[in-house]
Amino acid sequence: MPTFSFERTAPLPSEEAWRRLTEWPRHRAAVPLTRVTVVTAPPTREGTRFVARSGLGPLSVNDPMEVTIWHPPVDGEPGLCRLEKRGRVVLGWAEIEVRQGPGGRARVVWREELRIRFLPRLFDGVVEVTARAVFGRAVNRLLRRP
Image (cartoon, rainbow, N blue to C red; front, side, top):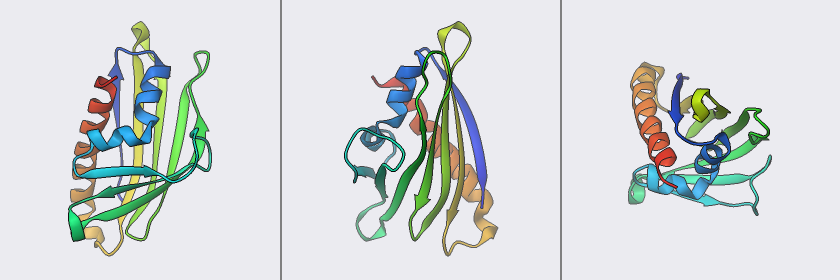
C-alpha cells in the first residue's frame, strides 16, 4: 500500500483553510471527473459518510469514506480529520492536518495510504506518484477558492 504525504501553506487563517478542505462537495470542482455526495446529515463530525465517484460512465469507481477523527482547529490548536476508505476497490485512509503557521499562514499536511484492490503491488510507485500529483493539485485549488 503506497503511503504518501505533502505539505502546503496558504495565506489564510487555519479555520478558513480547514473549511475549504473539509466541505466535501467542494472537492468536485478540485478533482477532475469526480462527484462527491455526502450521505449523512450535516454538520460534518465523526461518523459522517460520503462517496467520491471518479471516472467516466462504466469506468467510474466509488470511493466511500467515513470521518473517524474530527477535530477542527480551535484557539490556535491544530485541526485533524481522518477519513477511512470503506470501498470495495479503493482502500486505505487519509488525514488532513491544519495548523496556523508563521506569519498567519495556514499550514496543511495531507497524509494518505492508498490501495487499489486487484492492482498488483508492482504498481504502488505509479499509484503513489499519480495520487500525490492529483491530490496536491486538488488541495492547491481548494485553498485558492473561497
